[in-house]
Length: 405
Image (cartoon, rainbow, N blue to C red; front, side):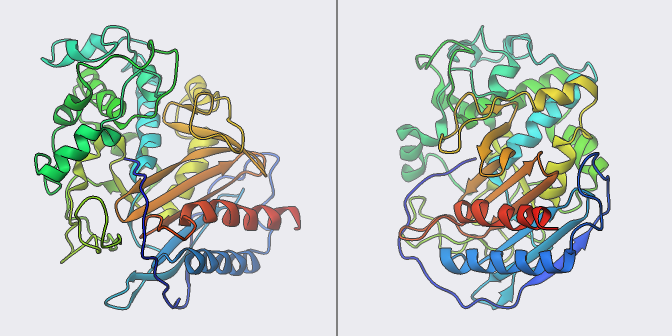
């Protein structure tokens, strides 16, 4: 789930020493720098310094960041605090909620199923969901395809940003300690006029991805999380990535919010190893707890074509990129993946925001590298957003190192 709001009361924290871990040696992509063309020790030190600066400048308690080189080596570093009250340092293997980055995994899972003939991305979702009692009340119900949902082109509202949803939270009708069913959240967008005909516009919507999840499960007769693990998490060895389907998530570090946050949540988003809200409601709108190292490895493997079979893998890369300054829009998004032109050429990936946590992952095909970062704080008023600064600084360190090798 993506969350956007204004924050105040930024705080500064003294940064502890940084930590580092290097994991994995995978494929050497054709035409890219070989495994020993880069001074990895020097690059890691520069990457550490850049992460330290991001944490200091943004007021984030801590962060974890990683990069994967063209030869597949992944390096993960950490900075700042995981738990500032207890003085616990962030570690390279710390886990954080990745929020809407999970949409990339949903799109990849759907494509994997399509490659195996288990699902048709261009079939109407009515094929699988027309018997649901709420389905006829869905805008564009009989026209929406699964691809429309994964492209955010179904003409649907997003319950997350509807006044009715905010009112339901403030009134207690929506209990943040409970993971409501997808159907209960979808109710907020029913009986509304379509924003546009299916396939003819763009509107980012978590609600649409919840419907996509229901369609995937109905089509396969299996759970989404089960298919995700079998098709992506286990084959790639993403050992630090798992469903955030309940508030007891081993290894999750505390996230932080300002005291006057709009959710009525405590400043610290983890007490006695339990998340103070139930992240399970995200499901296929996000729905993962992970680590920057896993995200960097996943991005490289996914966008270099080693996750999805054959021609279906190319569909991930068929998204026409948006310009550097353009917000999420079509072109620029498809099948759960973002594509954008940057100072270093085309980049594929996704961002994620949820109370207490913010993340990004990006893959740069011109250089064969991926970069990911996670922070245990969302943006604070008066301070630059951690992800915004990290997206500018961290890829630059890696790419400039490759250029100067």
